[in-house]
Structures are given as C-alpha cells and as structure tokens.
View 1 (cartoon, rainbow, N blue to C red):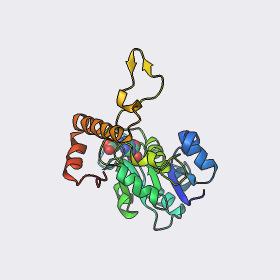
View 2 (view 1 turned 180 degrees about the horizontal axis):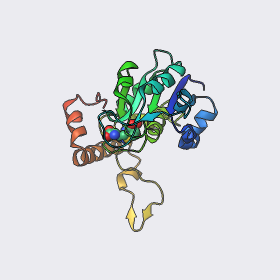
View 3 (view 1 turned 30 degrees about the vertical axis):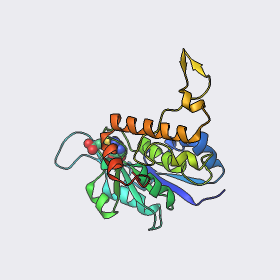
View 4 (view 1 turned 60 degrees about the vertical axis):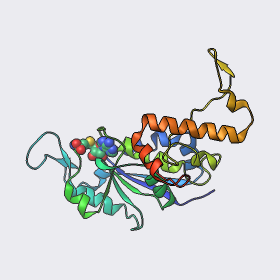
Amino acid sequence: MTSSWRATVLTLFPEMFPGPLGVSLAGKALASGVWTLEARDIRDSATDRHRSVDDTPAGGGPGMVLRADVLAAAIDAAHVSPDRPRLLMSPRGRPLTQARVRELATGPGPLIVCGRFEGVDQRVIEARQLEELSIGDYVLSGGEIAAIALIDACVRLLPGVMGKAESASEESFSESLLEYPQYTRPQAFEGQPIPEILISGDHAKVASWRRAESEALTRARRPDLWVTYESAPKGTTKE
Ligand code: SAH
C-alpha cells in the first residue's frame, strides 16, 4: 500500500531520526513506503563562519534562542508545498489531541520545526506562520521527542499500518472515552481470573461491559474528557 504522507523535520539533531520511528509498526511502514521522512539539519542554513544557529536572548536572561534568519532560511530551503501544515513543537502550543492527530494523518503530512535551547525567535513563528503544538504540560530539552511522538501517532493511523481498522476506532479518545481494561491468557494470573463476561462469548454483553468500564474510568481519571463525552449525543463524540 502506498500513501504520499510525508514528514519533514527541521532539527539541529537529524541523527535522532528515524530513531524509534524506524522500528515496529512505523518502521515497517517507512520501509515499505507508506510514508516518508526527511530530517533536515537547521545548521545547514547557518551563514556565518562558525555556523551559528543561536544567540543570547534580547532583553537578557539565561540560555540561547534559535535565530529567526537561520530558521526561516531552513524552512524556505525545505520547499514544502503550501498545503502542508507547518508546525512548531512548543510547550506554549495548543495541546495535541487525537482529533488533531487524525486531521494531520489525513492530510499530506506536516513540516515540523524542533526547537532547542530557550526556544525560537518570535518573529519567525509569525513570519512563517508556524502552528505551535505541545505534547503536554512539561518541558523537554528539545522538540525532537515531541516530533517523534506526533509522527508516531499519525503514522499508525495511515491506511495499511495497523492490522485491523477497528483497532483505531475503539481505542482511547475515539469517543472522548478512555479505553476499557484489556485481558489475555492465561485465564488465571496470580489467582486473578479474567472477568467472566469476557469469556462468555456474548458479544452484546461484552460490548456493554466495555462501555461501562470506559465510562467509569473516564469519569474517575479524566473529568475534562467526561464533560465532553456527556455533553455530546452518544456515538457522535470525537475528541
Ligand atoms: N523556554 C521554553 C522551553 C524551551 S524547551 C519555554 O519555557 O516555553 C526547548 C524546545 O523543546 C522547545 O523550543 C520545543 O521545541 C521543545 N519542547 C519542550 N517542551 C515541549 C512540549 N511540552 N511540547 C512540545 N515541544 C516541546
């Protein structure tokens, strides 16, 4: 199966790619051409003798900031078509959701800028209209791990990557619900049996048990998702 989905990553550490994206589901799909990955070194767009990419923050303060001119040149040199989303991994960004992942997986694939140091000069974010996306309320030392997380989440949704189409439709967040508990053999583990209903063979009962477990888990662990689920007509929620 072929797809033209493509991820273009701008990074100071291209050697971090494909990294974990080179194994298992994503790696097999990469090898078979379901998606392509291009990791470009931002430093190749440096212009001075020292190939410098960063400088001290205007106004003072610790650390270094990625230069607008170098990063803009790196973005321009990647020649990504205008229909591709341009993302900047950033703790200030909108938190990444499964809904956004689904959108990104359906499109042509993004350009992803990985920040380093204290971040990037604000002017390049505006001039190149980068959409800031966060993978959570914590600070990484660079955008690469965030980019890998984002790409991994998208790639597994590409046609032909996951075994069964259903495995994506029932999992966590597919309806603003967390997934129900899963079990497999052995039948008894340290004295704990698999819940009897799951081995009853009654598919309707299994489905309603799973739905009830999903609801209970979501209500207990994620009141934010629970509000979304409860306020939407059943069966239509897309987080
Ligand atoms: N000083 C910045 C943090 C910079 S961390 C601040 O306080 O907002 C360096 C780089 O790591 C960022 O530019 C970004 O690309 C990446 N990064 C760090 N945390 C991230 C997160 N939660 N989500 C996405 N990218 C993140």
